Length: 236
Ligand SMILES: *Cc1c(COP(=O)(O)O)cnc(C)c1O
Image 1 (cartoon, helix red, strand yellow):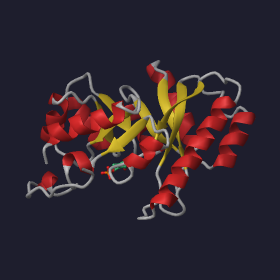
Image 2 (image 1 turned 30 degrees about the vertical axis):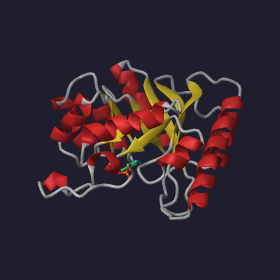
Image 3 (image 1 turned 45 degrees about the vertical axis):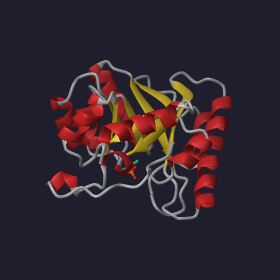
Image 4 (image 1 turned 45 degrees about the horizontal axis):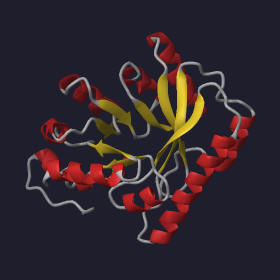
């Protein structure tokens, strides 16, 4: 994998669409992340708290850390002091805990609400009805140490491109609907996190502002991490 060229390639692709690139570095060793860093990459995505904390400790301090994986409430406290954006807020209970830890750290934590758009692949996230009712009932307002900045979603794992496109469209539609709602404090629809290695082109076409790309930058996960030969990842 030519990590540097991959970073440059995806940065160009995304910048052309006013979108930013998150390099998803989960399971990848810090050496590979340094290659991406040296190519100018500053936004990295991780899905495990322990791994993110360990890497944050070693790598340069100007990295923006994005939590993209399912987050357990008892682990929130470890990332709140430094995390740039939590993409995976999937319950009000989790939001409450982020708020509590934000208050302790005197830090307003930027968050995205995860939306369940795929048919079955993930059980995590809010649906359209919950979000629209939620905002009408101002259920997000009590949290003064979280800043809700947008939505995140994952499309179905399918070869059916039109299905994926329609799911991204649905997410964008919810995003726009919420954006029209009267401003609640700490609630502003700015970021739409959608698109991974296999479907980022569709996500860019449908209005993504943050794509989360892992294997197409670093290669298949697990192979390099244990020191074996690198298999070329897809995506380019
Ligand atoms: C792993 C992961 C990605 C990146 O997946 P790739 O297919 O390697 O690009 C994106 N988003 C989430 C939530 C992930 O867990």
